[in-house]
Image (cartoon, rainbow, N blue to C red):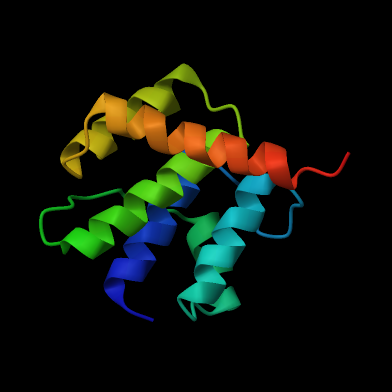
Length: 121
């Protein structure tokens, strides 16, 4: 597990505002999936959920890492209804990741269409 993955998972925890790692909500499932992809230990995930860290900056990320962050944020926004404050925070983070509002909206719409296609009838 590397620091960039930890910061990405922490960002999602902060944006989702989850308080339990064993919930069945789509936001928790997303965070669990990202943690599994990063080989992030479940014990550390529980600790991070119990005590999230400050979000921090994104300047040292590679372009690929920025894209991973952005796609995770957009997927979260497509899965759950965030508060207006959290939506503004997502827009701020997108800007810091060098994405504009149009790109953010387009990526969210792609995830929403994907979710609709995958949803059982």
